[in-house]
Image (cartoon, rainbow, N blue to C red; front, side):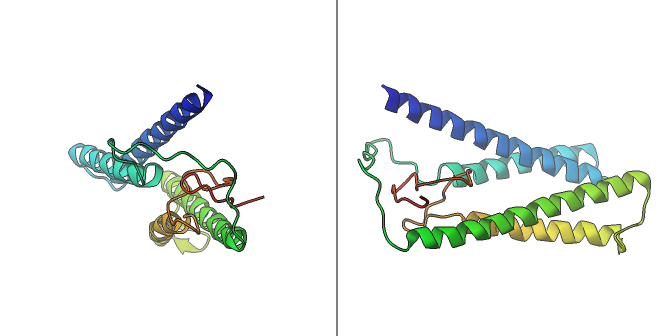
Length: 179
């Protein structure tokens, strides 16, 4: 009974995270379109495209290996699987992921600074023209997001590890990654 409840809670949590990601990307697309002065039909179209892109991304991140309906899911291993070397590989992977997350946060902070500068009418920030800082932040975000999705994979089965950075074992293959 508790295994079924935990599995159901995990599915609900994944669905909620996926919906929030899709809506967030849709709203972000609308904000960028409105920021660049697009008319309202274009802003709404950007929101719809961002929502559909966010949905596709959420399916890829949170539900990468959905089992077919006819095949029952495999039972998890009774004891954790430990292989030498995978913990070290995962530590390197996690360190790269922390760097990528820091770069993404810096890019988002730069986008916020550009928005504040636009509100106050400043033409430059940190000695750079406002537009160059905007383009640099968007370029960093456009590079860091796919790299983060590509990097955050299990060293053994190469499937995505999901939204948590504090993961201890792979939810797909069961290998112990930490501790």
